[in-house]
Image (cartoon, rainbow, N blue to C red; front, side, top):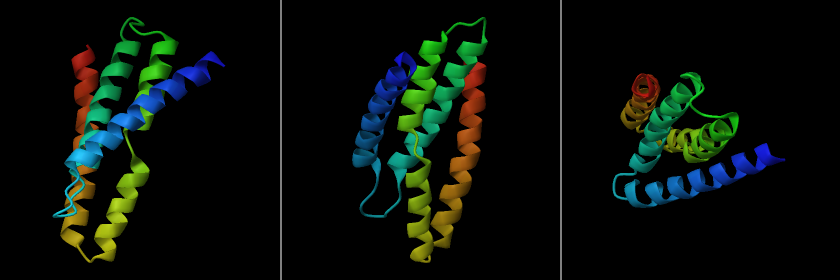
Length: 121
């Protein structure tokens, strides 16, 4: 039960922060989802740091990892919103934005995880 509560609390904080970032960074003028992109990249960096620290000499407990990686990062990052925003680009015929957003999200997201793991060392 304690583990469920840790994931629940972490996920709640992550989701609220993602909402705020999206609210202030997603562009209504261009339709470019800067907030979602930022949340996914920041979340990738954070999960790299968190899991890197957890692996390094057991610097974090299982409870810390559940709260921060599974809960907070799980609530903060958002693949479902990413998929929907790509659907909107495709439906509008905006293949350039679709390609740039998709490729940048994957490439920069992976690089952020690796950077986070490196920073944790």
